[in-house]
Figure 1: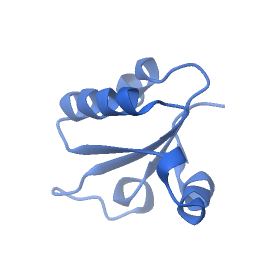
Figure 2: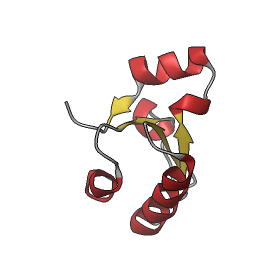
Figure 3: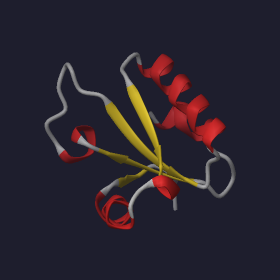
Figure 4: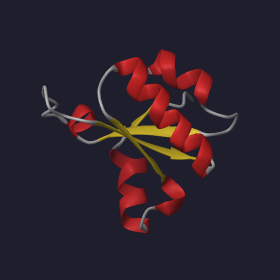
Length: 85
């Protein structure tokens, strides 16, 4: 994931892995959920396509800016940061 994600994120953007891959229970029929911040909608769509192709599993990219505040706070608190320090 990190090899495919890193080059796709614009400078200053952040990303968190959420869902069953991050919090347990990931299985054969699971999707990958990624929340990004500081990524415009078109870039988020491209990222979703690239990651789905590279990982060969369905990937859904959500923009933090579009999420309700309580969910965004949970992502920032409990998600697995994929954006480095």
